[in-house]
Amino acid sequence: MTIRRIDLSSLEAQRAWDARTVDAPGGDVHQGSAWLAYRAGLGREAIALEIDGEPLGILLNRAPLFGLPKGHAPRGPITPWGATFAQAVAAAGRIQSAAAWLGAEYGLIALDADPWLPAGDATEAAFRNSGLHKSNEIFPSQHTMLLRASANGTSEADLFEGISKSTRQRIALAERAGFAVERITHLTPAPERTAMWAQVQQLLGATAQRKGFELGSSAAMIRWWDQLAVTERSELLVVRGANGALVAFIVILRHGERITTDASGDDPIARKETPGALALLRWTAIKIAASESRITDLGGVDVAGHRDVPVEGDPMHGLYAHKASFGAVWTPMAGAHRVVLRPGALRLRSLLGRVRGVR
Image 1 (cartoon, rainbow, N blue to C red):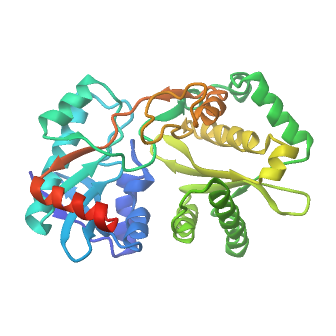
Image 2 (image 1 turned 135 degrees about the vertical axis):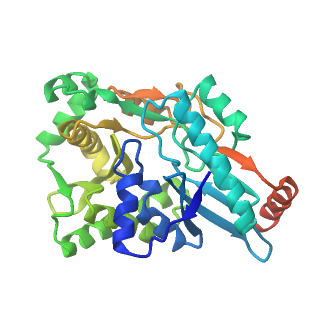
């Protein structure tokens, strides 16, 4: 197996990389050059590899003082949706080969990877035979909720009819309130994009404070979203109130066969007064996906410790029911898997993590 490192320092190299990792079948923005640069800006070491001609982006994380580099390959290597068993075997083999190469070149102790393959015995067998075993997820959710009808020519009227009556009513309520969805894209002047992203950041911060969770670097995330918008791989969908203030937003990602809803938020006061703004935005995302014959990926609703379909009483059941009301179907994915090169070093790193907060 031939492995070489790809230099992504030039715009030409980045464009060529993104054409293979983001735009190609199975592509994902989390394998793109912008994501690698974004995470590198937060202290990771980004490595772009080509393994027998196939691209794979990897991020290394070193423990302070001790090194002990651990890697992860978010949504890679790229595999088409509906991958065959042979493609799953090939993906697992590339992960194992990348880990061995990084072990020799960088002293890697373990590699986590999630090539976004469907769950099943065949996939698990492919991973297990390559020495990979289930690990903690790289992203919050392991599974996702898909609306495939948007990719197969289903009419807008039929897609709308497939939405539950209560959600259709919320969409109509938002429209009667005078809400209209604006699409912030590569055609939107930069100053206007910047102003709208600033409002998004404020709403994200307020949501994090209200719900008591750690937001991280929202400014860096927004720079990544905006960079994707410039290259037509993301859009910001917004609803504004009468005074121009942001009422609700959804960020959508355009990659491979999918339109993915990546992040969303709304003003809690506006939600009480007119609860249909987010429903209107998700319906808009579905229409965009249908216009491009792409699958609508509404994202996951599972969290650590709760990887099954949420049921009544579960914290995520409301979000699950909301996404299901659009016709989206729970789609189980295999999730992240790990190959361990140096078990003792990994145990030491885990101990350091408990003491120093290193992951």
